[in-house]
Length: 417
Image (cartoon, rainbow, N blue to C red; front, side, top):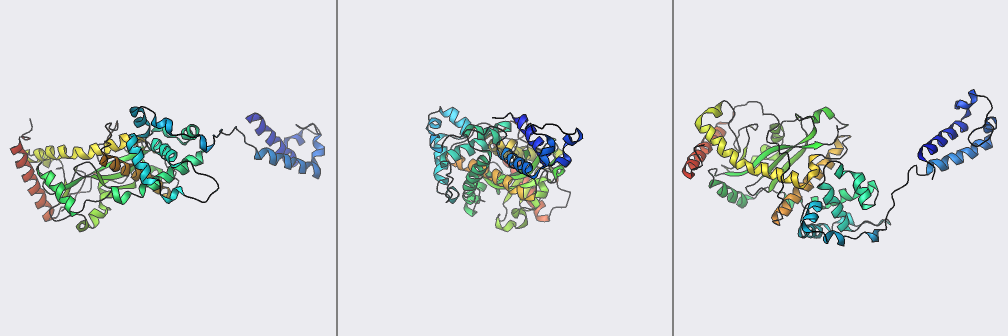
């Protein structure tokens, strides 16, 4: 095979010969070109036609050796299941039982059926590639790495990932769902034992870093950690199951701003019964269905300090859920997708939601992940501008604070030692 730089050089010379007016050779007078033909003779029509044909041939050849591809039948997943359980889990981010469960869920999805003459990889291989890619961070999650490891083209890696994500996201309404009325009562009863009767969940903001500056409105995605990131609002229940996620917003948008655009803020009656609320940190606004931590300087009073202490203990659930999510699906620590326009946001949202669905799916199988992300953000992105809470919200807050503090003194959790 012609060396790469030589082939580029030959193509360049041929272009000059075909267009002698722009060739540097005309400055030197009659001479021989790379074919050993006097340059003057190349001006003839026949010579130019010949060179055009040769040029097209060179241009149509690969400039680098293509990846050797094994036939589809040679791919064998048996060796994957013969691995030690720990090694399998490290690669697939789940147990062998969890892998089989996910496979059975997605195998009949229409996305894996087509009339193309180009045969897809077996679904099990597509799932293995996607799970490993979702669980890989940095260069370990690059398209090139998976193209090499699976002996497929880069475009195939991208197509496979999108197919599997689409199949997983088919189950979004089944695995990421707001608790119904009975479930909300159950959660409230659990939280009553910790002094927060009426609490049905927790809300917190987090970021999903991008591996490079977006081509579209890049500065809006620049965060305080000097990364380019997406903002996400994640809600979970007392069992650390994700009940709602809103993402796709630039990190420049404050947590509280994104919250105000969520359905549970706009139409709270669809999500809450009277007296039910979420717990949040002090970046969020107090309202009839959200109780935040007390903001300084009011937190300096003893009762407010006690309340913040108790609230922080409960909110560990949300921080832990986010830490597990990012630890298990490490691609969320540096998302390697392109963002050239608003339409590309959907690829990020689909990727993130697939990880959240897998989080809940495997949690319900008791296939929990033990390792937290190395970095779990516990600071919210900006505080909502001061505004006076409604009288009912202020009253609810005072009732919740008093009830929480009294109950935790009875339990011996307070006073803080």
